Length: 321
Image 1: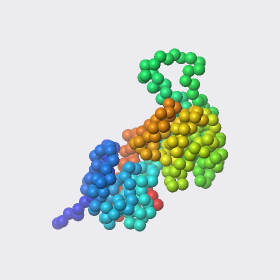
Image 2: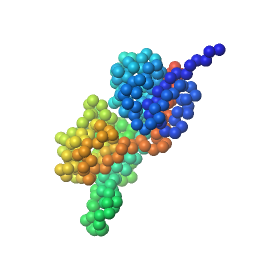
Image 3: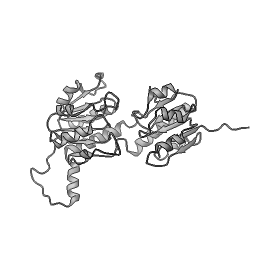
Image 4: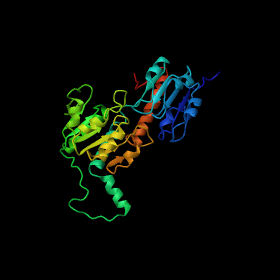
């Protein structure tokens, strides 16, 4: 009796330990076992005949990708919440399903947003660099004064799952919260936060956390003009690449208009704008929002679950429409 061949699946990056344990018994999985992304040439060469591909944000899924994969491709399972690396219209035209990994990284990302807010507001990065440099220092009443967060108004740009989680954590600091979405949320979802038009939110936010997804409409939404609307001495935390204009952010720090800023996710990563790197009051971390063992295992597991569901003839658990 002839055995049915296992469907071929491409995994474009090394995933967290244990994530592929449920995939490999039922699929012929080819894994790019590296923390570095596949080159474009290697990716295109590996695509023909695949039934499914587990991608990351570094993998551009476009007409070229889909043509290389051919008609066998059934699903692209993105190991991320964002899908700005995927041409969803092209996938739909080719009959290819798209999924992402929402929900499972909410708390880890919100936790990091608060870590960055504290680090920027209280000048933790500066203080550590000073100690490691070996330069002389001494405690003084005016030494390295930072921003007091307790009771300070907090603005959130993008009140999705992550924004709501950031807002819930603000209660522990007694911070009144305002936010901007395209439309206001129901009162029971907004966790007591009040909706404001964008420019009004900026003017009322001595602390601003940016969590909205990157889309064609939000790219550089926070530009030089909008940064200027923040109160003098404000602190900004950016958790989404491309929404905040990084060159404008560096200029606002350099001019002293912003007290400090923190960025987790960069528009051209792994490259970071040299002007931003030069700012002493910028806290910069290498895309660590979801970087906990539990969260990365959950993200990888959800990507695998989406693939398994489609290979079994069903719909993905978390489809992107």
